[in-house]
Length: 417
Image 1 (spheres, one colour):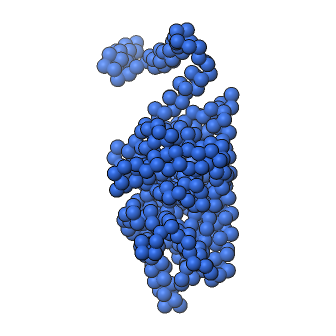
Image 2 (tube, rainbow, N blue to C red):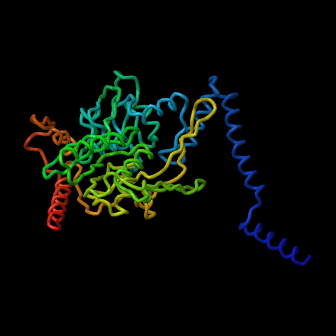
Image 3 (tube, rainbow, N blue to C red):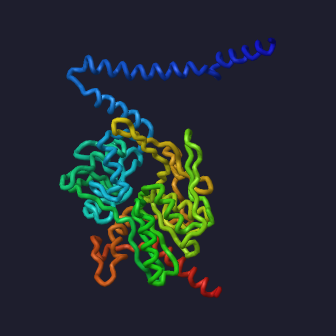
């Protein structure tokens, strides 16, 4: 009896000091907050100056709720949910850009090759400050995507602020059906295979295998995997691409969240390209899936990573279908490298992303020219067509450093024999 009295006194003390609250209190708080939403809905329906559609009110409340979480969580109305499904299959309508949030502004992560935005000269790092004259500050990524997309043949005007510019630049872009070319490849001097992976979509692993096989047939002895300005894509695709280079059932990445138990993703027992000397190129436009591949290869010391710090998009979104065809895209976990590093950038501390083994800082102006010169690598029997004047062309220091390292590695291996 005495023990019961002591326990009761301890609980009462904890309640009094605020260190312990009964479960009932939390339930009551939640009920009061939900009741507030119901009251607002009722007041709008009864007293707003014009009659309103109740579904629009509910959808608006749901969208607003998701926006308070992070830039990647989103409530999708049925039509938006349907459109989202087409994107990961490698074809969708739009401008051909990937965007994220930086310092509160919509920022171009990368324009995709051979798309309307690419042809007009939109560059990585460009800030989209207006869409059709409306300021975008505070606008969520997915909301912006919906404004930018539309029927093929229609136009949208965006205002861009580029580093070094005093005034915004206006671009009027005609929307097209965007077909993603996941992989491009060529053989460089010294039998160095070069593979540019533009985005992780359903076909990426198969496209990579095909490209690597073709380079092998041409005599490839080492490999450069270029993930610069690769905004990511499907987690499954990133894992499958990693499996091409990592074997022995090594861990590739893992995810973990507050309500999500840790989930590990492993390589297979054997990998077809587990021993080829390899360099990976990254920059501030490398995000998500490209950071997963880079982090795995770096942690396992499988490749030398060269370039500048990556974007730092390492959160996991789960798309939860709802009864009426709408869906909630919710951030439920974060990605981690095999050694336990969080990929996701903390906006407060600015820590996150992948730091290369060899850091080479490239100015925005140089990166812009390099991006415009990109097609020259694939020119074989014809003079390369480039929007950059001959006198303005720049050297790709990151690619050159990777080539030097792999050539030195080939000489070293030959000496060992």
